[in-house]
Length: 304
Ligand code: NCD
Image (cartoon, rainbow, N blue to C red; front, side, top):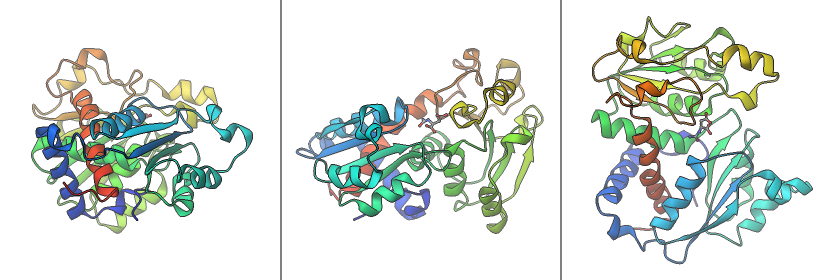
């Protein structure tokens, strides 16, 4: 039995397969509409979510399966003090596969150890978010044609932004990828991510201003300052509007640069950018359903 806890749980070849399956699902939805008949997905979300939880549920429903779950820790027995390992032991009897989001780093990993069904990490604290990475990879592949020879700027909260950590972790295995890491001094990537880039000999720079890098980028991955991970509100307020991508900044960028954002957005992308053909974040959210459908089929070992 397989789980998806880290972006490295799938090899590049397996990711290619998953992306191709997602394309086939997108092009032939009827072929997949009953592939999960009789199967149940549990969504155990101990932290807020819109896209991840609903795209998982949409994915399972579009495959013919059913879903159950909870959308906050308050509405689960976690509020009574139940451990993640006890919860997953029970859910293993209620569902065939489980997507779990938790504020504690490593909680989905703990769940996977105690589970008899596949567990998917749907975001663990400020650590990793591998299914957002699958979404990001499909988006890049689809809109750019390939995942190589790219200068990727990641901008915003690189310290607590788990989507950033997972995307970098996955992308270091692709050919000729360069990173420009754009963040305030206090929100630079954690040292384990910097060390990964050094160990893999991946070219990267860490800078503070966005303007100077705009013209070099093939992809700009914007992120929200992760308020819920800050220790005090004062620091959050100081940092929250550090970067605002607007029309003036977009004018500095390549004509075919893609703007991605895992969403939700707060202020970091001005709504005036939404109509720019380079703004790809809403398309990106839609790709999340196809790749999660592909993931569910793969982890349940359902051949179509
Ligand atoms: C991200 C997350 O939860 O980490 N959202 C998402 O899953 N699309 C990004 C964020 O919350 O800023």
